[in-house]
Image 1 (cartoon, rainbow, N blue to C red):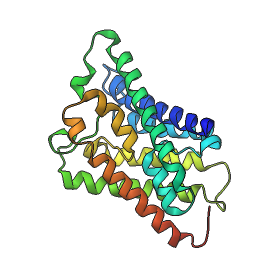
Image 2: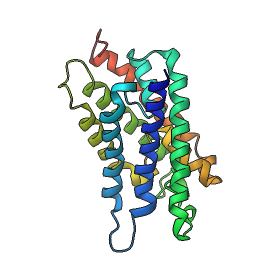
Image 3: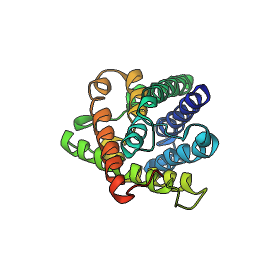
Image 4: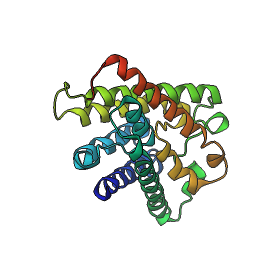
Length: 231
């Protein structure tokens, strides 16, 4: 298990450092800000690159909602879910901590900008309500898992799954950054929230509940889409 858990830790670390790092460091950087489009691609690229780099070691989950969705689909052992999730959360926290060290290196105060934390209500980029945020996170995670489960199915084109998954995550961010700053990943939400504290920790429950619900629902539905198939 050690190589597999290490792969999950490294992959989630990279996701937070690359995705949240693009939001914190370069999204609005003077004259060369990458904006929502750039941040969306950054998140997609973190998953794409790590899926190719270490996906063959651990399966490339990097996300508790993905792990539990795969359990619900019958493609992953329930007994191995907890160690995977712990490794993912540790990786996300380390990624957030390293990002904080980098971001404060020029004397700035990155926490004042929200540190890429996920939120709803007054802490939603578009001021969307709790209900709006909840529905968005459930639906986006549901389709993220459908993409993953379909792209990694044994009948899918071999070798292209990371591209579909990475572009799928990019599209999800393009849709939902204005709503919640896009989570679809409880670990990704936990890293920045622990560093930011305050409201981010108070609202963190939603970014565990909604993505996990969406992921598990997708796992159940996958049994209908691909009956008697183990992937």
